[in-house]
Image (cartoon, rainbow, N blue to C red; front, side):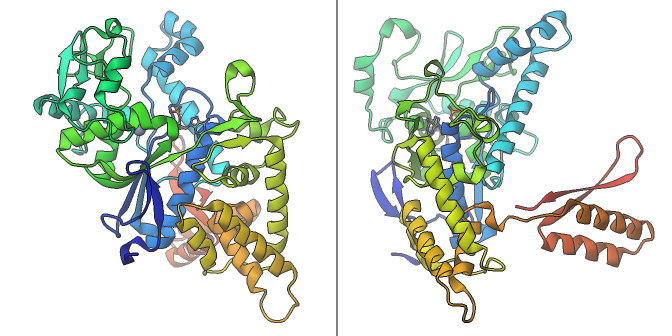
Length: 483
Ligand code: AMP
Ligand code: ZN
């Protein structure tokens, strides 16, 4: 094991083996995970990659230092499904001219993205370091960060893309090792393709980088006319923008291996002339519900929001930490059967852990080494949980002499794993009173005391934000829990 790997081993879809994880730059470990397409509530299957890669993010921060990990998870806010939803929900307003299609689209995407953020926060997930939105990376940017139009131009310039029938297409035949991730080769794809459907393509596997928009459709000006990007190019642009041409880890669900990730690799490698896009490719297994594939037609399709807030599943609401634990009881690469029984099991386990952890006054700074070791073995969460159950047993059997070290270790591990045991508990009236006092101190120009109050609150996990009331111009202070 090399020092740089810190003992972490990860299964790499690219090589189909578990490997030592050696970051390119241990002072900036870089991970990209494909995020949601924001047109509807995220379903419980969508929660799986968010939770799994949240655990990896936490582990990487532990191993390499909190400020030495950059985690990018995008928001896909350009997609034909979003346009259809905007027309469905705001058709009347659009027809009457009260709203433009673009405004309607923005309403759909902002509302959905806000809901997604609330949902995954309730599931105990940290915010990623950066969360770029695809629409902000279509055209060349003032800050010079990578963008989709420039990437497509490079691909055309390097002979990897061509224009046909109003589309820009990636030329798969121009990349001799296309298909490495999914282990599909071009011959197989050609044999299975229906040639007549895509007569303008040189090869059936060629995929869209840019397509023209009709005047009613959203679009951006480009060298190829007013249009919009294909799906895959956005992740090539946003990962390059924040993580560079080659980075450490790229993740998502199993269904993204082909075509999405295969095509991201093709675009990024061919545009930049690199031999890899990311060194490690990780994919979570699929979630099914009560033994069946989740689908709207089977009536077993559940949004995260419904599980948290309604009694649609098992006749009751489920807390976020129970959903989180149920998700992590199965190894991330295995399929999960999500069931009421599994949620009940998770709830019982969590109750036992919390009871034991409550025997400690506070979490400590030392994460149990066995927990780190289990997670470092390709995120063996189940093995880590066995350690927690053992600690819970030791904590409750404690004979009262000295510190209850097992309870402290358990509390520390639970907090680290994102279970809300160690979460900041805030008395809102106390915070409001402190903010009021601070505002009076600021008015009296007593900056030292004002800062002391701010820092004290921060130490308790409450972050203040100063701003101005847009109407009265008065100073106002809001607060949030620092995660
Ligand atoms: P989508 O919005 O469909 O692109 O999906 C967002 C993320 O959720 C992707 O990483 C998908 O692979 C993942 N995903 C979608 N459905 C499931 C499922 N049933 N189980 C696990 N992951 C899923
Ligand atoms: Zn992607």
